[in-house]
Structures are given as C-alpha cells and as structure tokens.
Image 1 (cartoon, rainbow, N blue to C red):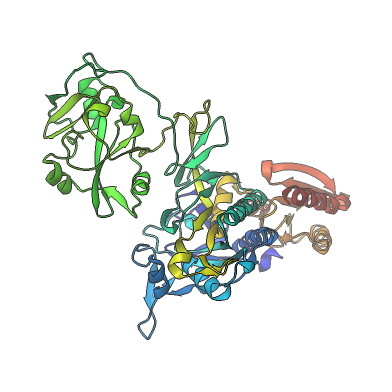
Image 2: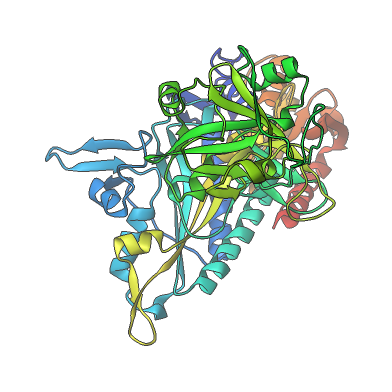
Length: 579
C-alpha cells in the first residue's frame, strides 16, 4: 500500500477524553475513530489488525474441531424469557420493538440463540459432541463506556458453544477450548494468565476460567501464588488468612471473661476504633447487613478484611447481593451503621472462617455509641454458615500449596471459558435420546474471546514513548518502507524495487511515498508501530540502506540485495515460533 493513498490521519496530541495509553495511541495513530460514546469506526489500519486477530482465532478454533456459523444479532425477547434471563440480565441488554410491537434484544451473547438452534437440529446422542462458534458484533449498553475498546457498547467477539452427551464429554470439550485459547493469546503476543473466576450473569454448574492480559490499567485484580500455578480473579480467589493473636490487656481465651459493653462515642469506623482503642483491625468484627435477593442476612468478617458480595450470593444460591441501606439497618437493629454487632442480632449469620478463629474480639453492641469486647465467636453466637466470604488479601497463604503467598496484579479480561452444564438446555428443552432411548438434556460449555478488546490489551503491553510496537502477527503491515525524499530519483527507484520484491514474496509493505519532511515520516512511523522499517537515504546510491526493528529501536546498515532475504527470514522464524 502507498501511504499517499491510505486513509490515514495522525494526531499530534491525545484527545482529552482518552484516559489510557491504548485509547490515546489508537486515536492518534488513526486506527480508530469515535462515532458516539463506546462506539467506534475501525479505520483501514485498525481493520487490518482486527482481521489478523480474527484469522488467528479462526485458525485455532478450526484446529480444535469447532465449526463456524453466523447467528443473528437481533434476538426475540421470548427466547430470553424462556431462559429466565430477560428480567435479570439488567440494563446492559439493549431492548427494542419492531413495527408490530414484537420485542427483541440486540445480542450481548448468544446462549439462548445457539441452544434454540441446536435443539431443533440435533435429536440423538450420536450427533454429539459438537462445538459451534461465530465472530460477530455484540451490543451491551454499558453505563459508563471507557478506555476505548476495552469497555465499549459495540464490540467484536468470538463466542463458541459446545454440546456433549455427558459430563466427561464436557470436560474434554472445555480443556480443548482452554488449550486453544492459550495458543490464540500466545500467537497474538499477549502476556496473560488463566485464572479461576466466577460465572457471573452467564451462570453454569461447573468450572470457569478467565484469560487475563496483565496490564496496570486492568479493571480486574487477580491473585497469583508466588510458588505454584494457582491464579484466580479477586472475586473468586480463595486464601489462607494470616492468623492474628494480639489483644489488649484483659483479652480472653474463653477463660470465663464475659462479654462487656463499653462506651465508644463517635467511633463508627474501623479506623476510628483502631486509633482510639489502640487495637489492631484484625481484632475487630465487621457486621455487614446484606440484602441477598429478597432475604436479609448479616455477614461477619474481620476488620482488616473486605467482604466479597459474589461469594455471599453464591453461598446462598442467590442472583444478587448488596449492602442494605442505612435506613434498613437502623430499622432492623435499632442502631446506626458502625455500631452493629452479631450478639442478639435477629438475622441469619454468615461468618467468615477467619472470624471463627478469633479468640477475643470487639464488635458493635447494636446501640448508638457502644461496642462489645471479649467476644469469642465460637462461644457467643451461632452461625447459619461458616465459609469464605471475604476478598483474599495480598500476602495471604495460597489455598493450593503450603509454601506460597498470594501476589496481586491488574488484568484485562480478554477471554472466558465456562462449563454451563444444563442451565440453558433444560430451560430451553435442548435434549437428545441416549442409547436407551431416554431423553436427556445436552451438557453445554461456553467460550468467549473479546476480539476487538485484544487490540487494546496488546497496545497496553506493546508500546513505548514514541508510539505502538505491534507484534509481527498482528501488525497492519510487516514493513514500513521510507524513502527520505520522494523527490530523489535514487531513493524512489530503490524504494520501488524493494516494494515490488517484498510484496511478490508475500511480505506486507506500507510505502511512505508522501512528500513530507523526514521528521514527520519518522514520527508517524514510530506512532503507527509497524515492527520492521527500511529507511532509504544518502547511502542508497552505494547499495546501503538502514534496517530498523521497532522493538528496541535496533538499527543497522545493510545491503539492498540482502534486505529481502533478511525480512523473510525474520518473518519465517517468527511464525514458526508462534504456531
């Protein structure tokens, strides 16, 4: 491609609303343009990168035995009602009506559609297993679109769905997709970790893993063991809490010391109690009043820990869990927020394991300006459930090995694999006849990749102060060919010869034939991030040109007759290593 003909306009400065580096660079380099909040046009360079991601995904999906199809983006609302998700998915589901007042939704995902399709196409276990996938635009009405392609309202996604006759088959399908995802992200040049995760709104009856691109701007926190392979999203992460024995004088190890109510004026936060009483937060019990679906419960965690609402709702088999409002708390307990405690509280108690190991603790007394001390959880109240109801903390022990400690990283979710089980097949009647002629629901798996999101994740990991540095597998062009002067006959003659030679051997080349100053050409080239650059300048008449590898800005002079083979060898070695 000749750059003079390419629809490309670079920007000197970053737009004011571009918060993260990937958004800034893709706008400045002319890869994307915003039409509305969270809605983008992919310009020619951006579209080329997107197609390369799609191609890698297709190759690995096909290699794993999946079959590609394409389903409608507009879905009948009745299908969502049949699955039970229409009323619970939330405002992110974009709903509309046609001229006949029939309700539809723009697909954020396709579990309902694929299950409806397969129930009408497959009736015998002999047709299983089967895995079907598509690469398609999805729609979610994000409350706050941000970070460019990382959280947008219209995005490109690969979603795949497996159907098996039994749970052993689902397990094989799941790990087959898991391995395919590892190959996809490795080929795309993504530094990632696969982490245990919560199934969220999609639901399911088995395991689930998220594939997280490590990046400081990631919206997810992941906990990783420093000694073994354990890794999990914070919402799912288990841990072994550090024990804490310190108590002020007069503490009790069930030595008969009674619970004592004492005056704590205006001490309604953990920090205020710690400062005024000279105790550690680990000696305090936080009592959180939660609305779990339509049920009110109290969740008890240690003062130095944070409650995990997802673990709470999962423990009770609920759809939602949230902290109750201050008025509800006052009405139930007779005390304001900050003075609530478990003793005498007429609510079911969900008690975190770390609380049950406390030997003497402080908690609210359910009375304004009063707390209680010398509380021994195993003696002084009765839990409904004891379990893991908190966020793991940095430095906690690993739940999988004895030696490891958890370390925290930020991550961008670029893929997610689920074991759905029979959640959708039972609701939508997707069944097959088994060997005995008995009807049985198909066992499903679901596997998603944020294709457009990968672009932002890669840029977050592959850039420098001057611009993007695309991995060869995703770069819009392999080589940026830059003659210093478009008016110099020698420069342009050498450039044309190399352009023709490289293109004829399958190398993708962008030729900067613009009549611009060298400084502008180099700045644009750095910003665009094409990984290999050939500069034709003053030594061209002597058969010498400059060869630059964008990563690390490695430069060397090389003969014009050697450059073609050098480029082809780099590409060959790269693709051999990635496949």
